[in-house]
Length: 321
Ligand code: PBG
Ligand code: ZN
Image 1 (cartoon, rainbow, N blue to C red):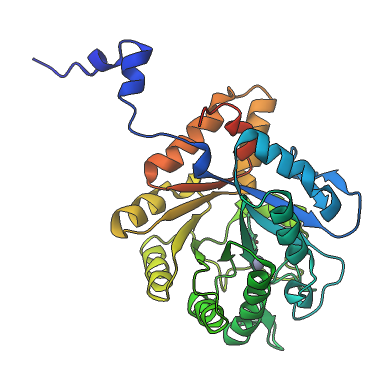
Image 2: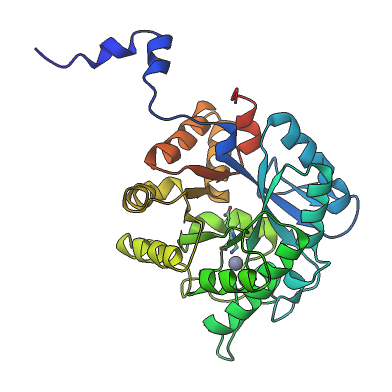
């Protein structure tokens, strides 16, 4: 006797019945890039199929969300004025604050997450406040991240997601939110975020590349898996409601390990470079389009419950619910 696995692969019905992993629209979070100015709807060179939207044009993407059934998004801002402390990020009338209000006005049921970081707003492009020697000062940065998160909270955001990789950032945000009455506002930590070459397309899209050096003194070294568990554990202990692994496809081992070790809602970020690679492979006829769904299923099978992905709207058209 031998194992006849093919018995349960005989036709589409039994194959569907046997599927261990599913993908639903509610698993997917759409990144949106919002810019200053009016009447701007400009395709992003490095992220074809994605756009810079001015506030007055946000209805375009909200309409697409409504019709495709993707009801959650994460916001990134592009601003003109940048300075050493990223002051536009905590301007109560800043681009993200306006976008939060606008999206809620267009459809109050859309779940709006705001990425909390400084790199899109600092003139040097790093994710925090610099010391005179160019080192990102952890504890000074926490004060600014707190101001940013609080400002987004006042604007009516549903969830904040700090992507800066400063130590103690979840605790700092939890404290400031609680002190100001936002006890029910959840925090998603970008817990295991690796210093990665997969972010290049995003940095072009968000005008957030560092003007000198790199992010290796705060983002994680991609040689390390055990350290990822320590980062996740720290975020959980500080009060994170959700945790994240980023990037996704080259880090499925980390997603798996985190999901097995911690009983916490886990999100994975299929980042810009992953999107660009797959889009290019399909465009050039190197792979069939189904490779996109395969990539998302792999991320879920590894243990992610939610996926932030630039494919959210496209893939939703092929999902029934
Ligand atoms: C900001 C931030 C980055 C991404 C999400 N938030 C860029 C970075 O850390 O340099 C990357 C997302 C992507 O590549 O799609 N800290
Ligand atoms: Zn950043």
